[in-house]
Amino acid sequence: MYQMIACYGAMRHIGVFRSETSDLHRGEKCILRTDRGVELGEIVCRSEPSANAPEDQPIGQVLRRATPRDVARAEEIEESFASQEYKFCEAKIREHNLPMKLVSVEHLFGGDKIIFYFLADGRVDFRALVKDLAAQYRTRIEMRQIGVRDEARLLADVEHCGRMLCCKSFMKDLAPVTMRMAKAQKTTLDPAKISGRCGRLMCCLRFEDQSYAELREQLPRKGTRVKTPNGVGIVTGTEILKQMVSVDTGADRDGVFHVSQIEVLGGAAEATGGPAPDDEASEPDIPPRPNARR
Image (tube, rainbow, N blue to C red; front, side):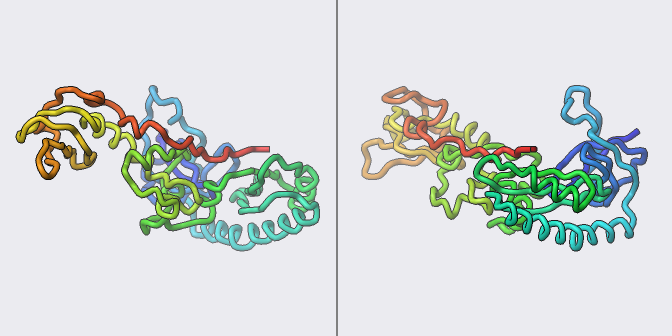
C-alpha cells in the first residue's frame, strides 16, 4: 500500500491518501474517498510514511484514476448543478430574510453532500433554509460559515504578484498575520499595498518573518556603542537583509559598515537580540474568521 498527497474540494484541501498503485504522477486527476464522501482530486506528490508525524496519517483512499468521463462529469456538476443550486439557495435566503451572503456552492462528485458557503456577521438560524434545500435535493446539506480570507480562496485567482493565490495553490492552514510582521520587514504600511485579495494582510508577510527575526538578532540596536574601523560611534540605523549598520562616529556623515566589521561595546540599548524598543509596539493579530460548521 502506498501513500499519496492530493488536493481536493473547492477549498483546495490537502491530505494524505492510501493508494494501491504507485504510478500516479503530479497533476493527475483521481477519484478520492475523503471524510466528506467521494470526490475528484488531483495528485500533488507521493508521501513517505512517518511515525513521528501523526497529522500526515492517511485521511482517505485513492479509489482509481479519473477517466475523461469523470472529468466531464465534474465539469457538468460545476457548471450546471452547482449553478442551479446557488440560484435556488439564494432565492430561499431572500424568502426567509436571512442576514447572510451566499458565496459559493460545492456539489461533491459522488453526490453525498452539497456544501453551501456563506458570510454572516454572527450566528444565523438557517434551520428552515436547510429543510427547504434537503427537500429539494434529497441529499445531505451542510451550511458552512466562512471568513473573508476563505471567500478569496474560493473566488479569487491571481494575487498582486501575478501568481495564483498562496491560500489557493499550496497553503493548508490560514495562520494569523500581524502588523508587527510588516513593520519588522520595513515594508510600506499602506493597506492597499500590503493587503491581499481578501482585504487582510498578505500571507506572504508571514513566510519571511522567521528569516527577518533571525537576521535582526545579528544586528545591534539603535543607540548601541560600537567600535568600527573609523573609531567608536553610536548605531543610528540598520539594514536587515544586507546586514549593514549605520554608525555616527562624529564625522560629517554616518559611516555604513557590515555587521562583521563592528564590535559591540554596549551603550544605551542592549547590544543585540530581538527588536528595538520602537518595534515592540504592534497592532494586534488579525486572525482569520474561523469556519463554523453547523
